[in-house]
Image 1 (cartoon, rainbow, N blue to C red):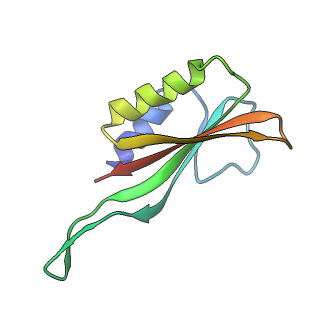
Image 2: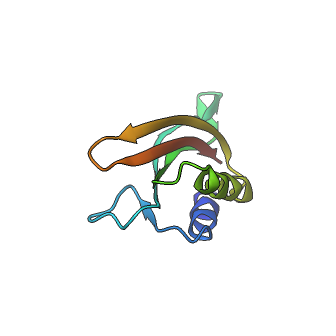
Length: 104
């Protein structure tokens, strides 16, 4: 399912990196990565595995257009997700939007 998420994010046309960039491209761009698990445990075993992570959008766009593109990609991927936060990155002047996802 992580492959489906990657494919959907790449289909947005925005530059996409897994975990980060050595040199970030011009905004807007995406970074995604896994940072935990939310497994279903039963009978002292992992009955079902789920990977949890974040998708981060860095943009100057304050119209919501880039947000809509990312949320459409998340829907297309079949991931469970929610919008987590918006931050202003003072060092770059970019808006940083974050979504949390889970894939099985």
